[in-house]
Image (tube, rainbow, N blue to C red):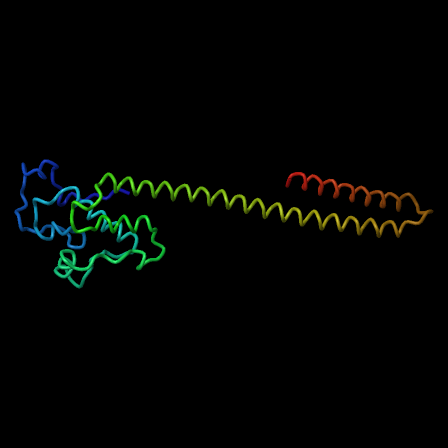
Length: 212
């Protein structure tokens, strides 16, 4: 996911004061995503930590579907950003929010720019979470394949047991029906039932060996 907004982009050298068009004391930006230093118009404090704050707001919004300092209007939002209570833990809004990402969002939303993680650390933390989530997804897929295979084995085992029981029952009936002086046709039917029982037993033994 790429998040790009060139509306308030500033050249890196502008951070050192070589190029500066925003006047001190001027608040510029979208209130919900502005850092305290932006709201306070503290141009000298604007930097990569300001971007980390905005990324923290985006992450918080992704986790909770709401921004951390939302209020009735823009002015109240800026008041909350400057000096209100810290943002609510995302997990208290949505218990399914991953703890690692919730903690990361709160760390990015610390009011003092010096206490926020740097952009690289923020990106690396998100990547670590993504990698862990991907590994967990692969494990779940492997587990699902295993469960499906186990169900197939159990179903086949049940079919073989049923077929073996039926073959034994059919053979017992055939033996009772064939007298010592039975004709060749009757004896052939008996032999067929005996062969069917042998085949069912062989299949059951092969299946048992596969399971082991």
